[in-house]
Amino acid sequence: MTQEVLLTLQGLQFDQREEDADKIETVTAGSYYKRNGKHYVVYEEITEGFEQPTRNRLKFGDNVLELSRHGLINMHMVFQENKKNLTNYSTPFGQILIGIDTRKVKISEQEDNIVVDVDYSLDVNYEYLSDCHIRIDILSKEKFKQQGGFSLN
Image (cartoon, rainbow, N blue to C red):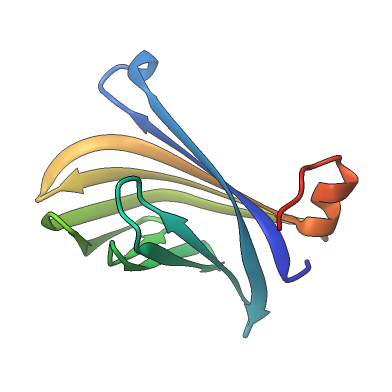
């Protein structure tokens, strides 16, 4: 995998009924590296209505995904298979206690592409909110260009 990557994040949040699922998709450029057997992806995002960017770091391997955000939003979420983790989610509007009960973390790695799938339950202030699925697709910039993709510059 090369350092320059295209990152596609897909989130799916299920309500009580599956047909009421909310789907979110973000595509952005990022930087990839591997250190001590763990994969890392770093990228920035801008929240609508704010100028300050949020710097995000994904760290994953061994059925664990960690997402750290610093800037406008600050938090450290740990998705560890068959374990529940708590974190404080700090926003410009205040803090929220988030519970993440992870059922599955699956990492599929190829030469120019890594896919991470995570299934988990989400609770806010100890109250169940929803079942969720995250899919992270990391594609090398070269492979993206070969597939006829647009410019990432």
